[in-house]
Image (cartoon, rainbow, N blue to C red):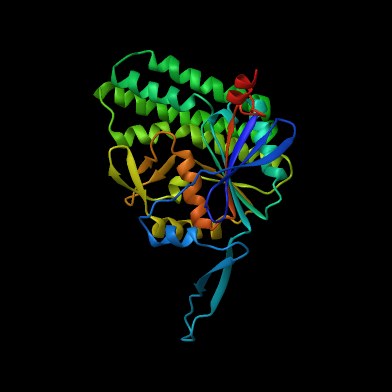
Length: 326
């Protein structure tokens, strides 16, 4: 059963939507509150956006001329605000072929005009990749077999869900990535040590594969869709042990540029991973995909951010009261 916590446009609290794998259930409200980091004026502005308000960013493109005339100026307007909704699917929601298909149907059935979907790696994949790094720097030869297990998990899922050119394209990229990882892990094995930046680059591959696979599946359903490597957009600064602060201003500039170059009403974005101001791959640390979704929601002034996870069931009553009554 999938379970979603939906952050309202004002971000004053959560409203929870519980749904079975086949149908929606009733909406419930929970009095918990969420606040975004107050490290930037952008985040504060996002929190006070009012429902129904649409913001337009204006971009100017200047033509190059040689005859001395004033260059022409072209305006491109990219709407932000209530036209956007953001979804985030955790590892359990993309942990199997069936759950990935469920996520795709949720994406397609959302009636929002524009959608950005943040995805985690398949369940257990990030742990498997961290274990690869640990084994390699411990000079444990079993890291090779462990990498093969990661490849097989992704390959079998792709074989189950994709076909034709889509399958060929995904598997080609997957094998390319695996070969690169083998070389990187071999370097770690020889050095007996892995730097934080090296580790961050390696462990982010699970999200890359999930985002590409979901994008293929959305397009397979006849819907226009692009996938986004969030390292091209999200910029963060280390702020302490296992903590980062988003650079909202630079991230928004990069997002605007990305949207102009990749126009699409559905975007599948990688969670968890980002870049430093020097364009060095990094992560938002463990369980950072929720943070990715919140940042994207703030940058887009989205009407809502919905966090999906997978649970065995939802109580229809308070079990403590039921036990007391009996």
